[in-house]
Picture 1 (cartoon, rainbow, N blue to C red):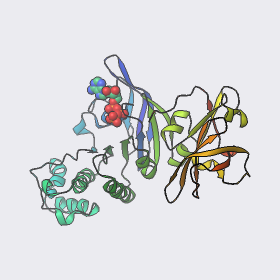
Picture 2 (cartoon, rainbow, N blue to C red; picture 1 turned 90 degrees about the vertical axis):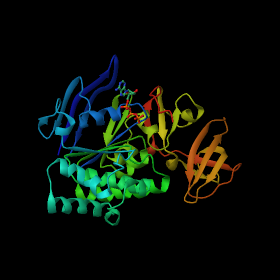
Picture 3 (cartoon, rainbow, N blue to C red; picture 1 turned 120 degrees about the vertical axis):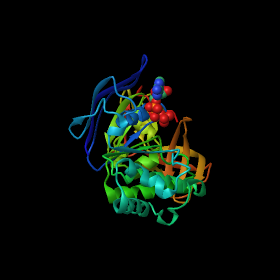
Picture 4 (cartoon, rainbow, N blue to C red; picture 1 turned 135 degrees about the vertical axis):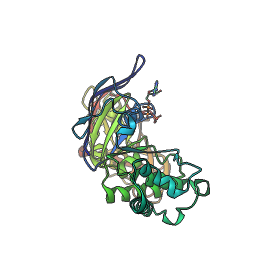
Length: 335
Ligand code: ATP
């Protein structure tokens, strides 16, 4: 189902938390809200779930304005970081619960619960209690419980943040496969750029209650609309016109350029226009991350496919087609 937020404003007391959000989530999308802690993304998710309503604006599910509709009358389902599976119920009963509430019974109930458990590869554990499951398995149960009711909107609130790194990648793949199979309209809230880039059909990047940019993962990464987005997603060098490097690169007055480290060309020979020394060299197998110090003492990060040891003299270049121009005082994300 298509979901639209129009000029949505949410205040808590005097503080404006969401400052006029406009968003369209197309039917079948896996839409991400990405931003730092406290930017207001969970507040948007909760307004969609119906836990509270905005002070201004409209929220449409299809063509129906659902403001004022209580959570249980909105056909949404939520997966969040603390799994929230019921400890006293078996896996089967946890998944069946939402259907029983909706008066689904008998063979139809069995069929739907079994199908949802099969989709998250949990059929063989259907009689277990949650205490007999790992964190990853509990999260699969939570996922099955959410999809079994066939929600108009599936909401994910940082669902992977309690899992260790390996499980997180496994669950990420699981969610991706599940979405490819079901095409359920989904909104996923996270501060993890990797989750967003790898799973999203589109991403809205938020900061301080304002949506900064909406686009596909490649649009957001390759054409960041401002310095905040550029620095929040991936790594970005910023070179102001006031620096020696900025002058060498002819950065226009009042501007800074952004360039990603993978686009800075580096050579151990003297064949590129700018000169420096490798201050830090971190070899990661697939790439070598370098911090290069220029003759004037300025630093730039560059990724080289080959290993270059610390202390090496290098030359480097910043290709014109990989420069992004921003106002010099455009704020950047603090990591
Ligand atoms: P996080 O990733 O840390 O959850 P977030 O982007 O999801 O961050 P929100 O949970 O939407 O952020 O909170 C945004 C701001 O609103 C925070 O400063 C928070 O303290 C405030 N806030 C959230 N809920 C309430 C509430 N019920 N009453 C007052 N302030 C609130």
